[in-house]
Image (cartoon, rainbow, N blue to C red; front, side, top):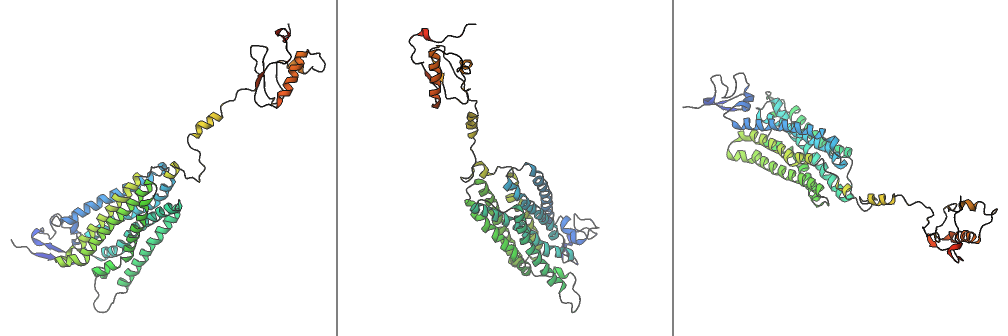
Length: 403
């Protein structure tokens, strides 16, 4: 059986032996344009597989974004709450990477080529800028004990991202709008670009990738395990991203030409984008969301400079707040003894009725001695039991007045 190859106007090749009589490949309807054949062509399985993985990534990123935002009221750690803005930014840019994958599955034309050239670096730089600022926050937290505020981190990430936006905008204007117009007009100028030029336009993104790895490495020595985990997540994400970028650059610039399949350029970029997007989710976003509810380790173990009472001080405070025994004169059952204590005001005794009339009434000698003894012991601070002096026998003890 003879097989013939059909080359469409967009440079796509299709085996005529596997096409319907209407001209569409198996799995695609006759009304579908040829630029969308990779989305439905059953003979090119890579397009369908990458499409399914990218669609699952879009749904997962959207759900994670909802979970991240809805978990804000339950985050008690103020430092982790400050990182939520950066993590939300990474989820937004990751969702954009999954959507960009479809531009590499769809055939080349003016819109998809412009989207590839502009959004590839912009979306990756957004994710990497957020990772760089998170790594910088961990480094400052380790050295100074506190990191920058959340709005400062967001401004830093925005500044790093805008640099790539400006670079790609200028590059797109120079290569498309300022293209030579002499001779016949060439259609789809944005699609005519060498692979090396595409890679060279991403040098700033590679610099951000290197900064991610360098910023995350010092955080592995943090004194708290929680922040070491954050540094490990960023470092692993940066290393996997570096491996993916080295692989796709080698294949895109040199490998596909050596093998003799230059048509693999689009699959190479599509697989690289979708794989790297899942790396951002699996190795950074999902673990960070799982750690949102953890307590701040600096609050659990306050530093030496903070005057924070330990938990056991509650018991000590309760002991201090126990009611003290009333300051009253105590008398033993043996009337020959009496408890004396320093007066806190006017001394209270059982003979108080006589004290007011001491100058007007006659008091026995024993009562006068007792009153005199009370005045003499007023300078003491510890109550003590004393026996009245000059008492010869029990018969001379004072007796309560009979009613």
